[in-house]
Image 1: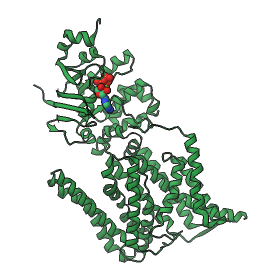
Image 2: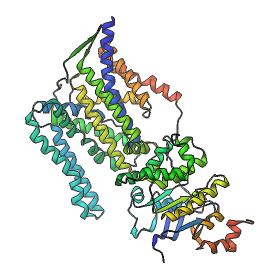
Image 3: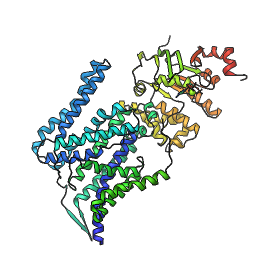
Image 4: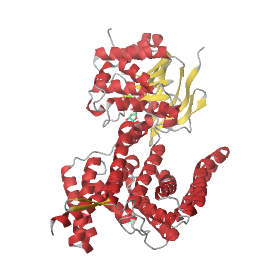
Length: 345
Length: 241
Ligand SMILES: Nc1ncnc2c1ncn2[C@@H]1O[C@H](COP(=O)(O)OP(=O)(O)OP(=O)(O)O)[C@@H](O)[C@H]1O
Ligand SMILES: [Mg+2]
């Protein structure tokens, strides 16, 4: 193993890291705001890739049907709720709020998909389809359970994961896809050749992280999300509704997932069920950060990314095993070194 | 006669089988300060939490002429009700400035442009908070925390401010200061429902008072009359001063 191989592996590792960091941030965000261990996060990664690949071929992606399906379910649930509360006169407005946007998006995609727009536009359309799925998942599966214990939420998350994977198979089939690279340029720096694609990944990831830091540190809604994560009751007392915060967190998580998919699409072949493993690696990073600390999670993601790329060189069949085994010493270390706080109530 | 802001009829709150508050009726007129006094465990905090919607209750609560029965906590905030609970519920891991800013969350949602100005007003009221604006709320002293809790509540520009022992753990001089601030708030159009251990001070600054004992209203009346009532003097005001 010489220097050039090490450099190549490190570069691969960093590319993975850039994506795992984003996913780890999404998982911490969702957990903080809603106490949900968000297993289905990975599905948004694969949906992102699969959707973009369909648009590349000029066909309407299956996720559009999923979007309509979810909106219909949400509308049905809302109708039942309003009916049982005897507030039927609110029904038309409520239905419009739920159905109008997905319908408009579906219509737009119906017209735009055959046009084979340039890649940048297709990425935008992909986001437009996949991101609204996040809040819909929250609305349909999690919002009714808002006050349930963490374990129940976890079980629901697992169920949603299986549901979304199954729907992925239904709408996209079992074939793997790859999306085109954003750049085919190669730069050489001494012994190192850097691909334009990995530069895209690094830059996008850095911009996204910078954007999130700004959002959480400077904007009212970002601060509101943090407030809910720190102290749910206090947040309610200043008028921040937990379900508004949950919806926002799920929208952000879906954005991050879809973006990760768009970045990862040109690097790996993605199948309807690939998201789970990718998401799980982001999860390992998040665990290193105790599902709370962003910097530690970034460190964890770096560890996962590098470990993955180096172990794929030495022991490629075992690379996932190695990465996931890493969780054990990390958990041991965390449980020994961290102070346990009582869950705030 | 002034307009009724809050009307509570026959309110009962239970923790499991224990009835902590029962059959309480009270009202607050717009622009007035109403105090609720009573011994430890009388149900004062329970009462305020129920009015805010934090605890489920039976009976009727009417605010600005509207029934609050099905209204969630955060919607009550949006309607102008604001509670500073006994436990304060600050955002300990966030800065003083962020805590205050979040107090104005509902105003921000409405597109209110005067939030900066309110922040300056709060800083003027509590210069200590301005000095410590970058410090985490969790690292403030007890008294500073009280100021922050009150400041955060003021940031929402409530119509009715409910304060649960705002002077808890404060030095006597600051208690005076805070109570003075509270009575000055009235001139800015805020009505106040006040719980205070310091019954003498509470009756001094309020217009009307209720005495809560064992979860029920034992006495009520204009604060001046209550302060002269022999039973109140004996139980809550003690001797002297
Ligand atoms: N979560 C709870 N579960 C069961 N009982 C409770 C709970 N909270 C309060 N209580 C009981 O309800 C009664 C009223 O409590 P509350 O806190 O309202 O009293 P308080 O008048 O505010 O007293 P203090 O002056 O000490 O603050 C007390 O007997 C208390 O033990
Ligand atoms: Mg109390």
